[in-house]
Length: 319
Length: 265
Picture 1 (cartoon, rainbow over the protein chains, first blue to last red):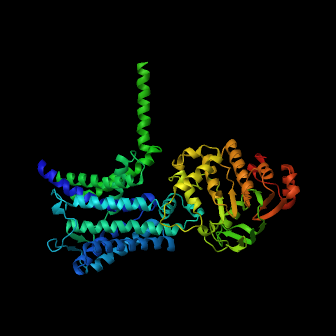
Picture 2 (cartoon, chains in turn brown, blue):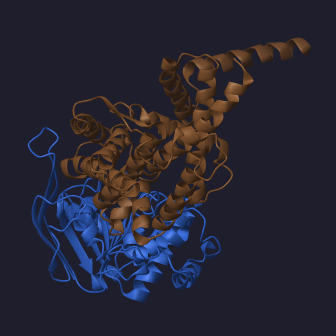
Picture 3 (cartoon, each protein chain N blue to C red):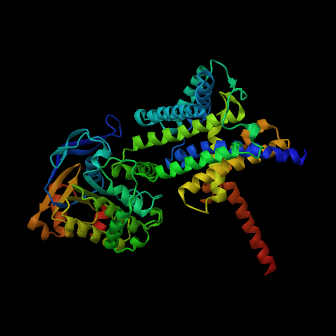
């Protein structure tokens, strides 16, 4: 393992992380603002790419229009989960799983029953491509994605400051209060899910360009990666600032850190099939931290009791 | 005006847990009535307030506010008529949002939420004035998260939110029960002041008989999902706790069986 190839992997990892950062922002909206664990994203993270590639390669549409169509497809997925939850009374997690499952079929169907499809990046002038990640040029995917992220975060910052945005935040924080203030919490949840999944699909469409390929499985485990990103961001930068735009940015920083670390670990020889296991365990531990803060689990407090006992003994001996 | 006509609410119907919480409830309130509501545990006091707010649909009967039938309106649509303060200080406010944002939400109660700014600078001045009237120093902490406030401060804020836009009916559901005695009496005083100034039609549920007697122009006692005592005007002014207990025994054929109510007499 030489240092140079480690270093070479970093720009690609940053680009990948920034693109997934758009997805993490979407997840932040459902998971943190709406308090809704939305598993739709595993499906949406492929649907966006599928819709994008069809619009671009089959219909020869402008790349921006193809991305907007991907965004709209994501919104439709969010709407579906929203209807499952608000109109059919299905719990949040299950609503997301149902949509995710349906999306798997839809994605396969749209791809013509193939599991994957490549974008010939020579024929299409894609916005972001992995090949340009190491270049010091304006079309470097890192700069382009950063610019898109700044626009998105600014738009979201504005949106969550509007009356509708405030209603969404109140819904996520306290539904009884929101309804008592005349907020239709069902509508609020559906709007939130639609915006969030739109962003996830946009991230998916950019990832398709970046890697030059679309795969029906490309979204598998997306929710865990997104959660990892949010948690890493909060753990490292959460105390610095309470500003909403800053919080969204920390989710993006979280994904970048996640992908840089993952790429380095793989470069150093860890079998890549272990990545999802490791990610899941890391997320599990981070999610457990608030629980453990309220009292350590039995086996750990057993240790601390033993330690206290030994310390007392020690103190007696010294006395 | 509030009209509750023959309202029945059955929880878990056709199961072994079936409970008739409201059993043909009838109640009429006039403009400006400040009614205190007492009754033992399970008498249907909170259920009545929830039925008015539309937390769930009632089994039978009709509810009218100012002549408008609201029986089938969803909770968020009735909100424009109502101001509500709950027993649990956590319920009435959004903890992760700022004090001024909470007030801004209350200020838009019953309006359609647009893409205009969630709070304007003109509003901020207005909220500051209103917060000053509470006398809790909240006017200097308008951008603090509500989650940082004490229970009493949160209840006072919820009360302000409930009355910021004059509601047709104010519903206070044991809103001081979770507070320490000193804070409770302060919040009660503030409530009374706001209600009298704005001449708000109010239903105030309380477990404290002395408070029920001291405040308001009318007192009702509930038992098994119905109003069994209705005392107003001159009669209410001369009421004592003992008289109330005696009346209760007569009206219900039962001892007043709430320890909390007896202890707090």
